[in-house]
Length: 275
Image (cartoon, rainbow, N blue to C red):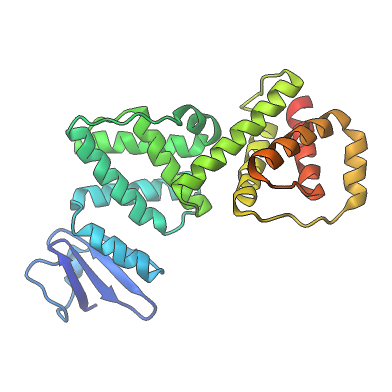
């Protein structure tokens, strides 16, 4: 391998057949220049980002971020991928690196920020919050910087963002849509959800993707009018609740629920309420 760019003493880039790779290692770029061979004994991490814009942003960020922090973030990402089987967009390398580096600086300056969505994050994104808690523990163990659950929540939202390929403002809106719909169901049936049940998990998953369609103004295609009519008649109370949701969504977002969307909402409501 031959060096393409020296980013700093600890980070270089090389070119392969398909993309530019970023290589990290203590001293791997020290007194090196483009065209020099890579000292492979010093390689600790190799990053491949398919998107050139992301790759450029990542390399710019690495000039400012300590190598210990960068290694830590990579381990957090790998933990999410291996322990929780998360499929994450490459944006996570830029967004989480930038966030964790800034969060550490804030904490050292005693500038802690409260997470106004912590309750919702714990409730709707349990796996991602568990990753956030593990990340906070890694930061404390390796960098001796203690952080609160609020920061675990912020890290969790970056994981959600990379899963959905949305920006964080969209993720916040998605969470708000989910909460509003759950409140409608809860008060319509006067119940408390069994949040550990499989049907609740399935309902939340469905609502996440529904909220994405809502906010991007895309629609399910109506496919089965017979099934829609059958479900409507079979589950009248759940369908009535769906109509309340439809009215709310139309009023707040000017989005008309198609029958296919009502069909699946009704099925999920029936399951989560009555099973």
